[in-house]
Image 1 (cartoon, rainbow, N blue to C red):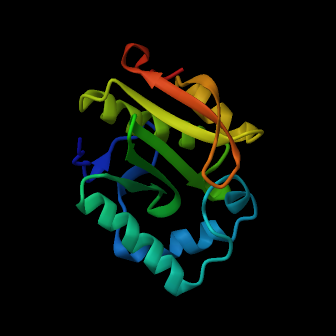
Image 2: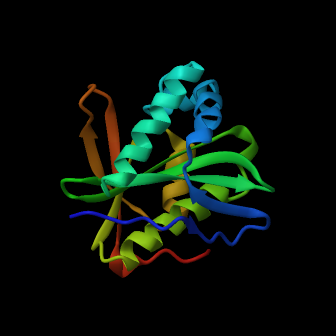
Image 3: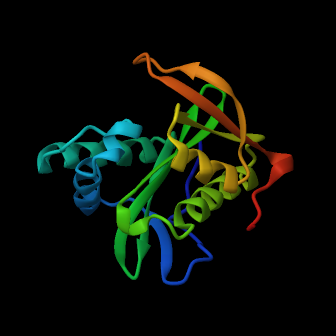
Length: 176
């Protein structure tokens, strides 16, 4: 299974848009790595250097080119405030996301996750999954508002306990 991601997705949030990740988005990855709760609750390394952030983006662009997933940059008024990605796992597509403080609190993460999930379901996926580190309550709320249902617990390859989430095709995300 492969996926060909669109270059952009619509968001129902004023002045917000989602576009495909570009080479110059390394600055966003560097900035995300310096927000203390992003490395704590995600797999972003802490305090990426410019060189390492460029490598991180290059890897994401290679995944997209191989049609195994990819990332979008969420912008408000032209300024990047977060990223939402989707990757093909053995059991189907899975979404992930991280936002700068400037992109939090207004429903932007929820709408961005909904947009990616809608696209994947419309593209034929029977479901879209997500995983959050246990006790990452803000991220859990994003998924709940986007229509995902808690499925249980798992342990990541690094030993971190994860909560598993799923949005099935019959539970298409709707704006609440």
